[in-house]
Image (spheres, rainbow, N blue to C red):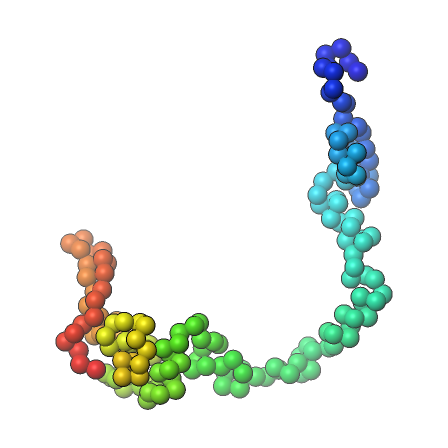
Length: 175
């Protein structure tokens, strides 16, 4: 112990990293807890991946090879299934994002804009006539193309500087 150390201080212990061989110092408390073997977290991770990686055990390798047969390219059951053939295909989107009202409208309404006649499903929005998105009765739903939905079904309000401040239903449009 050096003269400037207070009672209870411990000198750091010099160790050698098990992964890279670099010399580093570590507090004695870490050594007592079983630590102080690696100079960095990265060296510790690399060492454990080389020596204690469960994926390298023979029983795990066998299980992985059984469960993950070669499904690349034409062996993949989904190979070539794009667009209408893909199981997740829904009206030009890959999935619904929880829009229950859209599912209801798709199942029960003609797939065209009520104002202009647009038929491309990927460009059609579902409009609630009364403005209440929780009222999903078929009588309250109608398909509108994106252009009609934005320009005719809603009135948009802007302040004197032209900044958007809100919107409301356009009651003049009869759907």
